[in-house]
Length: 627
Image: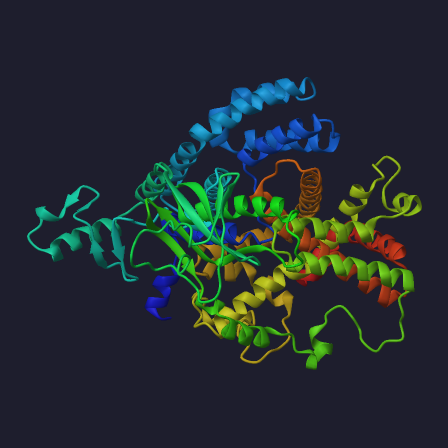
């Protein structure tokens, strides 16, 4: 394997420090994209804010939500030692008096939230340094602790309003520019106590810096993070361009400045990198200036976009136009004291190039039979008109969810699609929910969707990893260093596309796990093995999906009722709602067409299939693994 590629990938990652650095990078990536279905915001900060909003807007009256929050808070107290060490007293009092006065619970939760804001980040950092720097070997328990504290730290910083894109740079050195090989390109006159003037030559100074960098531990990396976290904010402005309007204007609304550059400019430099205030021939564009307390680029931009969108939505009611008004996210600048502090500008936004890209990205229906999944074309099996209309309506809302620009719309459209399929009559509810259960739409959604999602994960989870490892050994220089005899035995080399036999994967899973050079992959394969080992993991996944749906439903209600809600949670759970919605539509459509049944009958059949699946789960796991 190419040594440079190995170094870039951080392989092998067999020490606690190397494992943590790789996991940190991957976790940051997941939190940045928020499009990984198994990602969860299991963070006490989000939880306490949710409890406070539930009391504020619903007076803690919803029994399902109240019970979920109690269970979640108990889990935080039990499994998060960092949180327990700073908030145990208040949490114990809250759990003891959970069903008493909401005002008392609200008061305790405010104390907990203040404690979290003041102490939680430092406490997690200390715990992470302890486990990474003081663990001699990389055991399974050490890996689990590293993953847990890393996710908690990242999600806590996000809960405090810091963009994951900004967090990704927090552990990097900001006092020197380093190349991929670890060499120093440029550095300031001081570096962590070392002064340039103390060295005879620049080479000696740079070598001292390189030695420091090579010997860093988690304490030094997280020291950089702590320094970035504690950085003081600076007053500034985020400049945005509005699409869909033009003219000469100069006014403020809710602190946001609407202006054309003939009236005022914020950038005072004669030479600028950004085009945000550069005149355009024959067009008077309008900018917005959003005041911010600036610390980090992406966090300031996220805040400004949210603020500007709210203001535009409010004012759009008074604008007599059919033109869509929105923010141009391709040209954004931050200004501090009249100087550019950061900017984005996408040169592909020019109209001629944009038209070309649109043509390239248009869908080609030449291979429609291959492109459309889940539908058998030219079949004699017809779906009844009412059922066809019902499924088509769900697909309509699902498509709107896929193309929505706002995360709130993604969540709402997905929920509309889900509810439009699963809004059933009492007879169907009785067939799906036992007489002792709650027969309502949410319960139906939880029962049907959790079963569908479990089936999906059961039959794709292992195949996805098997395919991933095959690609790494076949096309990417075997960068996991899997021995050749295991590659041959487990059939991990497919030069040409061929059938994957999953039993071969499971037969040699332990050997693959023990021999890969990536502790991240090893940890993931251990999790996979555990998933297919006991029925408890299947049941836990079903409960996880039900809890996800409960939180999606709750966010749907908060958004619909104009309440305060978390933007980060809305983005993640909007994505989850869309994934669940797509799987639901595929499953219902498949049953209706394959078995010539109505939507209601398909739901009953899906539920029956799930009950039978769970009743024989041990045998199914053995059969799936070829045991």
